[in-house]
Image 1 (cartoon, rainbow, N blue to C red):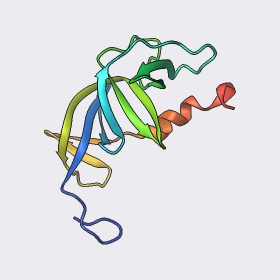
Image 2: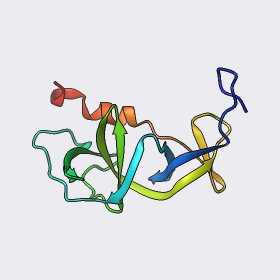
Image 3: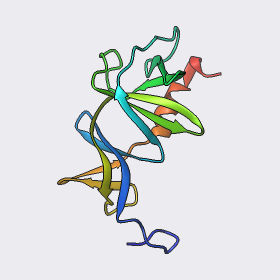
Length: 137
């Protein structure tokens, strides 16, 4: 396998595989920093539905983004803390399936997880949805 620059692509990628609904997603270890139980989350008045609120994680208040189709459902399971442009953001509404190293998929944005393929989660789009509309500054 080779990448667009002609170099060899890695055969394994480290990170987290998680499920949202029936879809499998992957975030590389360079972004996915920590998996933890869902902490107490404080709602932000006037915030968009996707912004579940803010939570105290490691002594720092971070925004928590809900990736569920139904943002009113209670997030269970785990929160995935991600690093984005030097800031932290929590993802809830996910079911973390595994952490570790995964076989690279046929496409550069995929990994194999058992018999299935997990595509890279579009974290930038999830964050952009929070920044849209009347909430945006």
